[in-house]
Amino acid sequence: MRLEIIKENGQREVFCGLTSIVWLHRRMPDAFFLVVGSRTCAHLIQSAAGVMIFAEPRFGTAILGERDLAGLADANEELDRVVTDLLVRRPEIRTLFLVGSCPSEVIKLDLAKAAERLSTRLQGQVRVVNYSGSGIETTFTQGEDNALTALVPFLPRNDESQLLLVGTLADGVEERFLTLFERLGISNVASFPPRRSTELPSLGKGTKVLLAQPFLGSTARALQSRGAQLLSSPYPLGVEGSSRWFEAAATAFGIDPAHTASVLDPLVERGRAAVAPHRRELEGKRLFLLPDSQMELPLGRFLHRECGMELVEVGTPYLDRALQQPELDLLPAGLQLSEGQHLEKQLDRVRAAKPDLVVCGMGLANPLEAEGFATKWSIELVFSPIHGCDQAGDLAELFARPLRRRAMLAFN
Ligand code: SF4
View 1 (cartoon, rainbow, N blue to C red):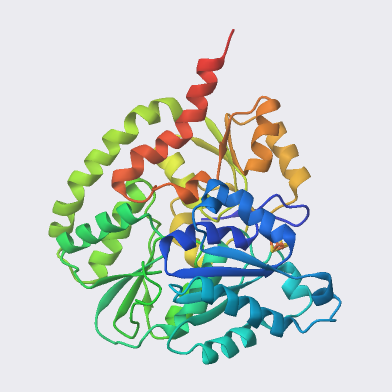
View 2: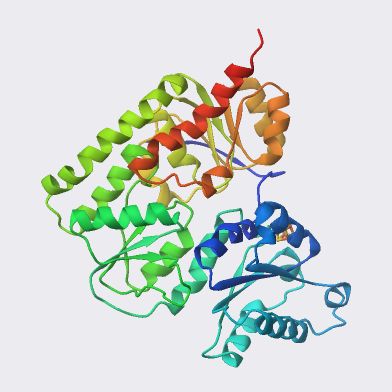
């Protein structure tokens, strides 16, 4: 397919990678995420995590003070002290992530070295891992990509045949997927990240990797460099994406296509029936997706092909061609795709196109609503269970809801 890509650079309205801590810490309750950053970073996490900050948090910020920034204090000594205090108070922590931020990167604080030093000191008790979630280097979901990449070297070696699902999934969705793989005849399935940070899956030549999320490019490459084979598939969003995702695994494991169909067909049928009432509301409506999570391509594909929406523009913060090709193949020819962001120019395009629905971050949603646009907050898509055929109806509903609410509130 020929691609029209608008590549933009300029003011951006996106989260930094620190935000991914909000869902990663729920996935691995025995891990702690210590951001080494400024008060700005602490504020960001607090606002993003909302009420969760009151429930014994498993994340925090070691705030770099003026003395650290001016080079007067030995930041490494201070960090060691903070970590020691933290582990005394929270002895249940098994993995400690030292998360880099803009300030720690700008003053070139070597957190990789600090992680190594602390790991050696705490050997047998706590594993200390470093990755960057800074706004200079990462956008939103890329934080998860960096966190998982940092864990890859710790995965034990094992060349036996297995399927590795990569990317954080809601617990209920993960359980459902494991049951379905079992029914397909694939029983040796592991998840990465695991639910316990100490139970890392093994990895080797017999590992076939199926990405559950499209934003895991660097993790995928790290897994491949250790011998794993990456399966190519659209992502498990919507009925079509999910069934193709399962089929990709079934084909790779030599499962009889007739058996695969017998397992998947009833799910496809049920999923389509669940999408149908929402399709009636979404069909023919014009959609503009602003860049946020790298999930825009699979979402656009689902909303176009299964819900009948017309795509005005699909924006993504970063386009990883290798990982998104199966999605690009399913999108309509001549699609207007944008990579990166120049906020003002993009908003001009939104206003000129007058779409029926704009998918965007929270910073833009209310202002756009005030201008008369119906909007959908994109952040909900990383917190809601949206993967799999069973969730396709719920996923469509997330987009139909703002349109329905708008219709209900119209007074004319
Ligand atoms: S890491 Fe950078 S972008 Fe993110 S909150 Fe901290 S200062 Fe802001």
